[in-house]
Image (cartoon, rainbow over all chains, first blue to last red; front, side, top):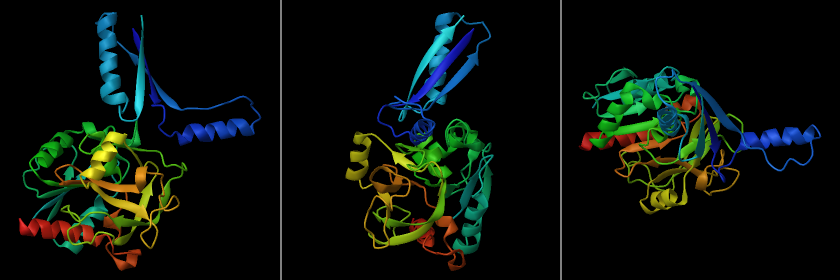
Length: 81
Length: 231
């Protein structure tokens, strides 16, 4: 089983890295890019001892307590069998 | 009075802090390895600058789980003085000992130069010998020093007089340009509600000798020692 955790900056939190990427992308000639926000992605392999609900619980706790900083970031968890 | 300087893997201003306490403040000081948990010998603990755990995940995020940090929390709860400088400030925020967070500098660059900061309050153990409005020249060296917090936290900090330092011009005025990293309201340092924990991005320990360009940082250590001496 695998948990995928996406950590993104909360709306409104300045993302200078995203802005720099957007700027470069525009310099390359890509059109129609309104905004770029940079986030983080984690893949967590689970050893299969927990069912999907427990695995989700664990991954969400991990995302909340370690992988994200709730002051500036949101997270989303997906669990795959 | 005895000082401790906490050393995480990746701390690199630990020796600067040790040097200032031993040579300038003239008090006993120990390095405390991040796996140690006994802080009972110390009156003040410094969490130094650097790149604890290589800044992996977020600056300060992993140091917060080091065994010593539970002891630092207890030490602070008992009223012990904690000074977090640069990465130390980031660690204190990640650990929840101070509110808010430090994100990437507004202009993305790692900023390494002397800046001006204005003393906003003398009602902390770290600023008693300074005067409100004093302008200090202190070095900064960081990529993630942009202080952010929600409106509620900001109002609380302002109401409780917990903003200790603000980036400013040489004359003390606040401006967009002098706010080097884009911090909310030019915040360079804040203290805890009980006022015994201070986090600041500028490095007072690197500014205690005129030879290094400024000795303005010595006021922070002078204040701390005079507070401790009066206890």
